[in-house]
Length: 126
Image (cartoon, rainbow, N blue to C red):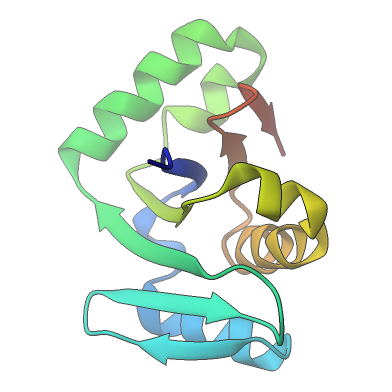
């Protein structure tokens, strides 16, 4: 049984939504399947990545909590009330073909001027 992993792109909600994400990812050459409240993204033989959009007070509270764990990013995180969640099932397959994930992260980060957080290694970056 595989464990799900997730990467967050955290940002202020006025910067982007799921439609903006779809447009940016398509411009980057990814295949996108829009399934109402989520996007499934992939390239040829790459793993499939699911992108969800969440916003609101719960997201902002979680971002503030992250700011306590990562004080260097506290001032940026306190303004984040939205996030794209990039999930996938098999970390080893993703790490073997890391370029697609990196492209998705960078595309969404550029579109939102957001902060990237990866759950499997606890790395946060601007």
